[in-house]
Length: 167
Image: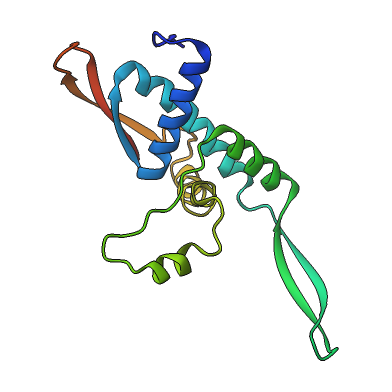
């Protein structure tokens, strides 16, 4: 992997931000060299989520209400593989937050995001992992979740730019 003209800590921070933006928005515009580095990391993270997204455990707990009546409540928790994958993704990605829509009221926005603490991680497990797992089973191949479309050179420094998008 090329060094991209930056020190290791700066390079890793830049790649972490760009991978998070790619996974959140579905596409980013950047230079070709950066896109190749980002693609490598993004595909690894999608694969981590794919391997663990179905690992759920049903837990039954007995809850006593205010009147003293007991009832059984069933919760769905992450299994060991999914929990480990979730923690790794949380360590590797920037925790992007949902934004309020232009015509969305504050109360509607709060109701929409009330149960989600880490929206990007939830998007990985609920949207991307099932989608790419189905694609893998259908086509019989893993990987290849991104596409690089070259857009020409940038004015000023003549760096070759491209659009990196999820397929």
